[in-house]
Length: 267
Length: 257
Image (cartoon, rainbow over all chains, first blue to last red; front, side, top):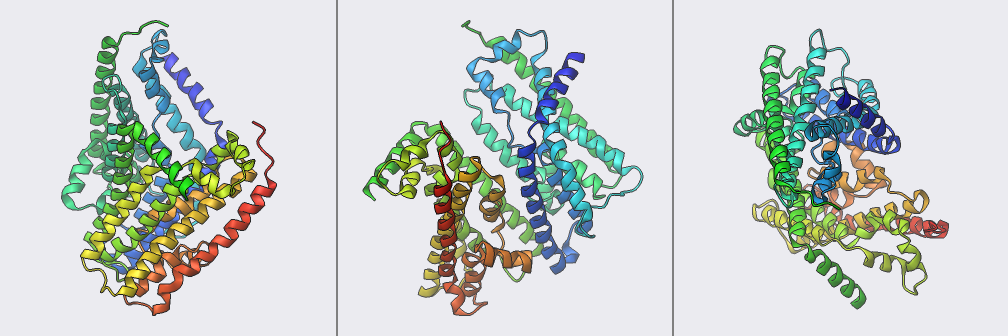
């Protein structure tokens, strides 16, 4: 376990070096957050009775979504992992006395965490300054914060386990691009990136909530904003754990069978 | 023009060499765009209308900007990735040739996948037109065409600014994506929906509202006829863009590669 932790720390340090890129991304996220809030504000002012969640809860959802974007964004694939499988460079990794899947997991977690750490604080700070109900409130009451943090960790694991499953599929497919394109679209729609899940039509909402994508950003963001009541939180987080176990198991099996099939031809 | 067509065919053939990946990235763009539109559909399903606009009217608004940005991104691609032209010294080679700089730079990169975004926009536009968003007259058809063409030119101006800034920074400036990618995404609703300040910024600073919000008012009989001519006024935006480009070219002294 120690070697994975030190590998994770190494990657985290490396990721924290990209400060200029984070600063550039920051302004984009602020503008996008502001535009989203303005848009929903228009709907809220016109039809407050049809609004499925409070405006304050929605604003918190939007600002946290922008702050944590890099934790769950499905489009930020690690292309070099995929190309290492395709070119065979993965053989070098296999020479090391570590499990390939564990190593990839440590790497993905570190990358997402380092990107988020660089960006989240300014966004959260500015969102805290925006007056209610359009900003973010700091105090959420007793048990919300620990539950939010726990479900964020679970979400990060679901996202990484899902992306690793796709990387593992690369062993079996010649071109993973098709499934990646579909994954991004599905995660946008069912994960709550396009519109938050409560705004979806009833049947689609149920499908989305049960899919692995519904166990991603949807859970922590709505727990923080109070849209998922504390009494429901254990069930939702249980589903997150279920998806982590399923996706990790599938990913491990696919990696193992992929490695067994592959033949490294020297050179 | 003949030279440009020749370059166009080269880029098309090179894209077609990797046919599977070409169609996959087309599919990717299609899904992303449709997802944005589905977002509008779901919200309108719940709320029926926003600011007095119905779904087909919003589709009309979104598809006009989508087509415009598709055109600009397909043919103005070189300015979007201009930092690459600078860093691999392709622009240095361009400067020693006796042809217009802008023209040659445009020939360097053409992205046929973006033409599908244009087609995507046109298909959505046809749907919006057929579902009776507007009572059509010949004038209104002309205004719609203007919205798409002038919109493409405004986006093109934004890419030109992006390229001109690259002369100073030598790398891509992500902040400008707010106005290109961001504007495309948020044009799913007329800019007036976002409130006055956004509308004024996008009218006077970056005149995207002049090709979207204002002419739309005319199309939907919510504003006077001269709103329909505003896309032409948006073309004035190209002037400062061109000036900035000139300034950049004058400032540029190679990256040394």
